[in-house]
Length: 487
Image 1 (cartoon, rainbow, N blue to C red):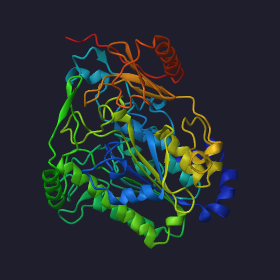
Image 2 (image 1 turned 120 degrees about the horizontal axis):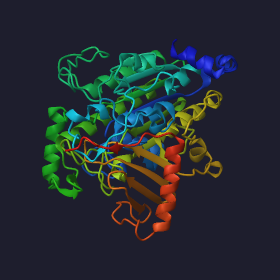
Image 3 (image 1 turned 120 degrees about the vertical axis):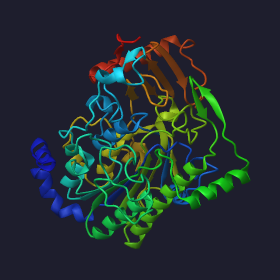
Image 4 (image 1 turned 180 degrees about the vertical axis):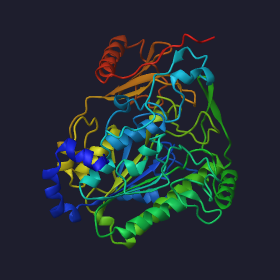
């Protein structure tokens, strides 16, 4: 049964579909840029003095900058699942990156001698889940996907089977790993090879721009999900040379500090990574230019986000997230706090900053609500995210949020340990399963999570831990277990 038919049956969309014909042509488009592994301070407008991101810096000036935006996980696939469904990954058992070893395979993996066996996870976004693309499709939108999917090891779970009319490059891979990787020929089963040496972010921007041109007379949802800036670290020679010269001119050096057993980068000085960031920014600029050329900027909601924090403790450690602690794969702020920009010319305020914590689960309800498709949203049950529309347009009507939660019952490739988190107000509690210990931080006073207050505030720590585990039990989360085969 195809996804749209499933959706229509489960949600009784007959009434909705009768409304769509009259209003769909007036509804705004949504263009969503999702970057892979981009850190919180990797844009000029978010604090970088080394990387150059003029297009995104302009987007910040024309829209809203969220300073406390979070991913639902410190790694990619779970966050992507939360974006597509509006749900916490733990509810769907999509808690690790798809392709990570299951506990039954641990004997042949680097974690085989760890104290805990990671929790089981599902390596496909279930077809029974209603995706954002399916919701927009039900609302009469054309839907388009370009780039990294990484939400299904099986082909039956790739974008074209999850609500997208067009899929350019989305498959089971979490990074370019075939052909010449970031350069054509790509040998990607969902993206035709381009001219020899073509750079992948340029190609994905071109495909997205083509879709916009061909669908300019009807509403569309377009998702440009970059493989950048994930490893392998590869950029053009021109960009690498540019940043090698800039690094020398600024007198930058590679510097690190200890984060548990890992070395954590504390300077932005990696020339190839800088080139990847700028190439991503150029690709964003090309798509925005196409929207302007087609006269669609006032009819298009533009959103920019990253799927987890910057890679700072492993695999080349190309960036730093300071003043945040650690990076990708960790439950500290550097692993889960990322840049978020939303812009809609003439509708959303320009140059505004929102400091209220938001999370990737919120995109699903926000996009549908902001685009005038609230009737579709109201027909979908069990979404964890909340619409940010009022926070952006009418802050006095914004709903209060009780708490935010994270559950990562796995060992991260980058050094992180299995844990769960609750953030309530300015307070953040991390519970680590291996040591059964808590860390408590006041993020308002200690954004770098240097001062663990769990011993100084035991009553608050215990109260937050109880609330966290009540949530985990209520959502039927899977937990790590003792590794009895450990040598």
